[in-house]
Length: 200
Image 1 (tube, rainbow, N blue to C red):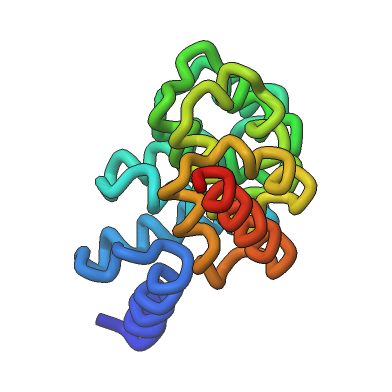
Image 2: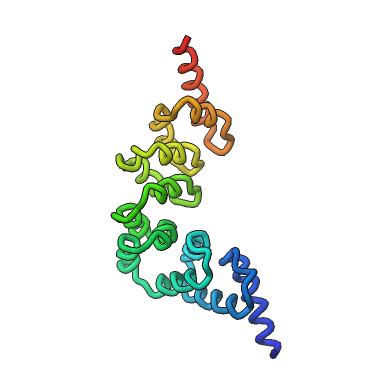
């Protein structure tokens, strides 16, 4: 093996360690293939690569997904977000384009479990978390509400508005959650004490 090839293989290993976490157990050839796919994506699509790793553990399937995304226009990604499978939605919810992100939430194939997972993601934008919170159908799912309340990225005004929706046990747990804003934790403590006093 020539020196340039060795250097390229070493570079691929390090690149995959950053952009495709979990791939390092594969062969150098597979790593090189993954690196080539990542290189085809726009620079701002780094979040898509990370999301693809989380959404699709299988290396071959992930390569296929990333290859498709690398050649898609925004309009095509919107259609893919609406009509694609769960792996596509879990990846495109972190797309750099807000229109694509919104399209994921509008997909008729979106499941309750996916929305629950989105509500817990601190990597999503404030806007997407706000849209989830505003959707009546999503709010009917208590797990979505609970996950939004415990998500440090959920906008404070949204969290405060939904606070009364928490059951006593989850409200008590929220009082000790150090990841949420101090204002929300303080308000949760007040509501918890008020509920306790009303029981007397």
